[in-house]
Length: 107
Image (tube, rainbow, N blue to C red; front, side):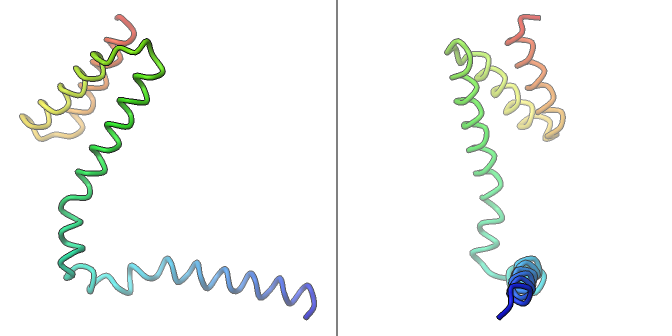
């Protein structure tokens, strides 16, 4: 097999695999919507991911500063309280971010 044919076959194989990976959710969408485990994951996974990302961010940021966690904890508390009270994610995240920046920068 020549180099040109080999390269063409490799590119064709990559294209088929890429198309298959991207088409799979559309081809299996109806089955996935009715599957009980997928429904259960859909209910709990977004919250779990947000909690893990928040904890990772808080712990990562606290290590890069002077070791005090109170600005992170206070800002996180504001975000949780606003989300529980108003149920508006953009408002909660905006207020929490603004408070965190104010506390960290001493404004």
